[in-house]
Image (cartoon, rainbow, N blue to C red; front, side, top):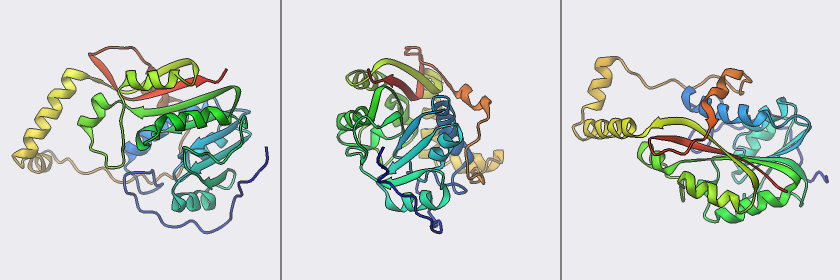
Length: 261
């Protein structure tokens, strides 16, 4: 492959955590681990492959894929500050600024494409999937994830999301581009219990009682994770399990693995 992407040695800029991208040392441990689980899962497919991480953010996951045995890893993201951070911090990988719907890599150039929590940020979701297919070699693997809007739109209001999908919508869209599709669940919820918790939480908010109850129970906001890299702790993968279609049990996130044939 022609290496048009250069790693630039420079001092890592200071990034503020806004909620859109993981920032090492600035992200709550629970959220840090949430992303970590997905990359540990993807890392099991990376050994000996040339890998592309689309919407890589600050590069912490890209670096983990390299650590997992990938021969070469490219990280692409539309945000230049994040790319500058990644270039300075993780120098075993190559990074460049790129739109996810116009990837700056040639056709048939990588063996594995990974893209977590990207689809919901894009207006043209189908073009993104076609681009991921374009850069994959024959029999290459595509791994991505997206929030299941059935759960997520009630759990969190995310200003950066353009269009969230149900699990069925996500599956149908990916089946248009990839074969041998397998779906996995992350952070499963018993739907009636989840709805009850949301109702109670909303009532406490309306009555301005949530803060009082947290103080009485001694609940504090989780501190930022001090870790700057993901760990290959095998126990983390328990959070991702084969998807079983059920109204009663819903995944918070859906992870898909497909193949280009």
